[in-house]
Length: 384
Length: 256
Image 1 (tube, chains in turn brown, purple):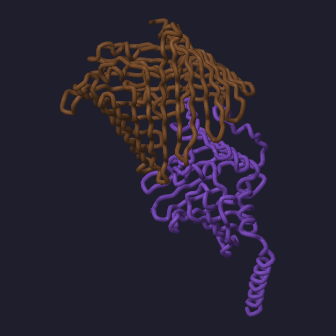
Image 2: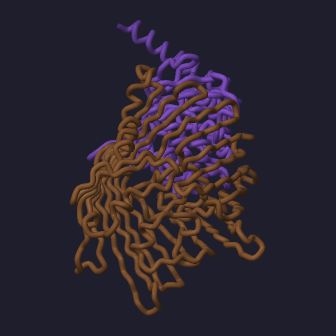
Image 3: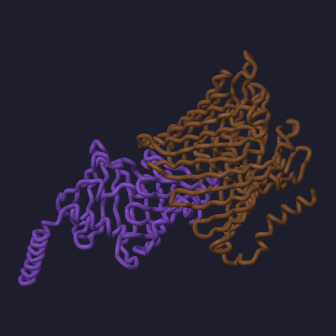
């Protein structure tokens, strides 16, 4: 614990001690501080479970030379409220480290509050000509769609976790070789907390005004993986897709594989009204019995949904340049359920935003018994 | 007194004569030539610029700053420098394709054509205006309507009608282009029903190095009082050599 705290404190302050800092152009610091109030309830009139989160992110980047760049990004959270007090194992859930390096710690754990800090990016990058090599904790984002990304095998994204857009990094070594203006070869190896290996290669190319990608490798030391994805347009509308096939490595011939695919369409009207549709098929069966169980589950490609088919639609519209509204919905046919998520965001000043976001889930995990869960969030966010 | 009046009358007459003589001599100049010259003046073979865009509304305003590189009409790259939340976003245009790099999520998003018509980060300007997908030369037919004086410059008044399949939101544009220096000094943008939507004026004519151009653009939606978008070049350089492969997805992730 002490060793870990020291590591983290060092990593936070080390950049300031590094030489060359007087050359300000080569060092950048950015991030945000937000305060988010959360309320969770089954029915509006029932007991609310509330939670408060002060969330700070610091992104540090040092352009050491033309070839070398390094980055460290730190996420700090101060949490207090009923989630922390009443949800069993909540502190452990917050301190969940999925990477090989243990860079996550609950700095202070009080009776009613928690201070958590994690370094979710710490990499060094070397570029020469068309070749780029990056080592360390990094985000490897292979997704093409907006909501579900079966191709995103390194850092799977949860649509519901809107307050952490950056997502955890992977402890990985990654090599990219650009074969053209919009084409590249990429290979990456990642090791996680269980020492499971994800190793994959990707080739991305541009043809007929489409970006295509083909990928293959090993997922979590467990499944052979093959994937295909694209992004292009049909009559001006964005058309994207991702497909991934997984086949267990053990007993290869006796087992059957899993197919996961998402298909998306988006269109922006001249008045800036944007509509998006996405459909997901997930061949992996997921053993969850409630929405909150899924909500806090660590994600992998296999757990991106709790039903075999899921459909998504969203409309978003900037009422004024300062005030944006969107409404998203999902339909879970096999559990007779749906999700509804309104989002209203107002820009108070150039760097301060206020958001009201709600997430309402409804469906039958057991036939005939409808479960409901609603989360409401109010967030102030200052970016710097 | 009398002779003086005569002299000024003669001068005026001469001016008028010379002017009409000049117009006569230039009659074989087509509207397309004028537009082409004006377009080239603002574009160059390549350019690098640092700009600030200000969105003004009756009760508030917001600024956006960015750096932009372009080469011909095919390639452009835009790097957003402010505000903090948008800093580091990069837009790349290659021929008719466009990408957006979102650094916080390390995600490359391919932008479909419909999204090009969307207003750029909440302004009165579309994505298309920023990356100049459409060309005032190639995507329109042109006709000289006459001459008018704008900001003391004698200007051609030119009507631009978009071609059928041009990626353009406007029904027509009327442009005032100074006949001597080829400055675009004023544009009026009309919707498909022929109603005037935006009036744009260009001013602050400055020597920016290898040429003299307007550096201050003001776009006013005519139906909306107190609404305005201002674009100002803080720096602009033309014809510095830029290689085609500068406009790549690799460079999108490196540029700053």
